[in-house]
Length: 152
Image 1 (cartoon, rainbow, N blue to C red):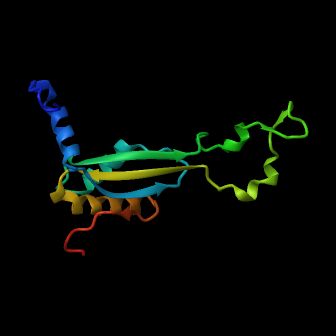
Image 2: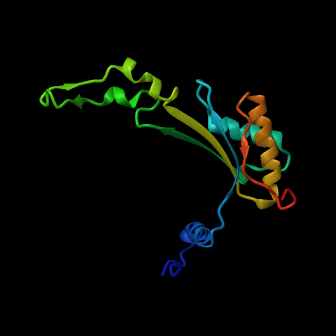
Image 3: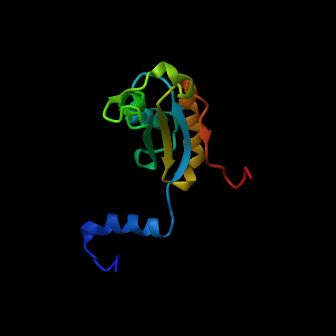
């Protein structure tokens, strides 16, 4: 029984489990792919968004940085693989990258910045502040994923 324990120190955990079971997830305000080489500090992004909006508070939003790669950060994953041929099965070799470079992506890692809002009443403010941050930092136009019922 997941809610049988009534200890006070487990109240926050019980609330999180209840929100998950009832599918009351935080709303994703939007995301942007960070294609710049400089490092991005999510705390600075959050502070910028909070300064931009007069209604948002510290606990209202969550900024998350997600790095998607092929296991070698921004390096070519094929550079770490050894290949064998049928002609010489006991001899491992690496591939010449000039033979397959046209098949590879230009970037091996994407960095996505996602902004979540915990308060439904403040989602539109968070969306506007995030869009302003993206414009101010010359980031690609954010994919704003929240639409209010009035927008439909």
